[in-house]
Length: 330
Ligand code: UT7
Image 1 (spheres, rainbow, N blue to C red):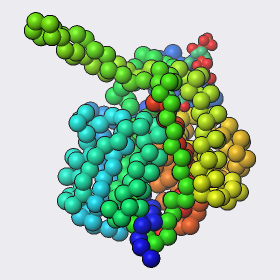
Image 2 (image 1 turned 180 degrees about the vertical axis):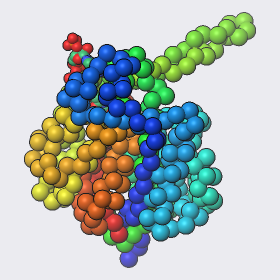
Image 3 (image 1 turned 30 degrees about the vertical axis):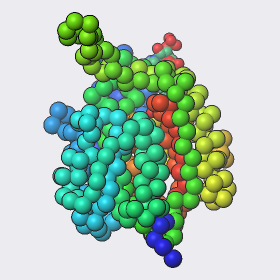
Image 4 (image 1 turned 90 degrees about the vertical axis):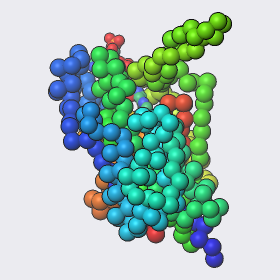
């Protein structure tokens, strides 16, 4: 038998120490704890101070995952960093590789917004399944506070910063039971963090574009509608591929964007609330980090046990969405 299955053998997470609760946010924009909590379920979020980088959060989360997996950093063949907010637009994964001393690993960034962890998991799995790599570190991390318009109450109350990581390893038994990934660029305008060009004439007929990225804009209602419709569908598709039914799921971990979305999806799939993992009250929407942070907290709390079947789904800008069904542990 060949080792071309995938097992998830370690997890870790890190959030910045500075918290910004709804009460304090209401001193920045016209909002209230009541509005934010009732519309989203969020009560608090962590924000990175200028000394906290994406690499520092990702490295801290990775160290925990590596320790739980009981591997040496030199055993890691590949590091995939799912992020939309790298410290360096050329990519931040290599810096993490250096900070971890993962001397043998090749490292790259992957961008799929809030679906990044799921897209990264499936990407990592392909390298393991083909037998190319044996040990992969997958990180989901974002510092969206850098890109939020702190005067826009429709968006600034939603997001928080953090990173989560998992170690994936080749295994005889394949614990990634099924997945489905989707994109729909026709709805790209619903959620953006886009570059706005400012023409700069250089010479003769040649003009280049300088400029900068504009703060996050979102059509919340459209994204909400999209999530509530598409997430149950994509989970059902992934379950079908896994040859499993909803009753066989031990835990549902959705991208932590809005408690109302989590509740609506669970209800549509007939998953009781005691099997749904949610921590967004404490962290808000941490984008690519939300699933691995929730996973790590549940593993460390002893909720998720080896062999448990987890249905997970990410959704967000792109638009992108996807689901993966996997079993925790070796
Ligand atoms: O990770 C990416 C995925 N993103 C998401 O999943 C986000 C999905 N969307 C949502 O979660 C919800 O649409 C929101 C939480 C963003 C908004 O909730 P909503 O129930 O759709 O509210 P709304 O946008 O319809 O706004 C209702 C009212 C508006 O006032 P009017 O026009 O009715 O007078 C807003 O101006 O609430 C107002 N409002 C606020 N009031 C107090 C909007 N933001 C706030 C706020 N505080 N922070």
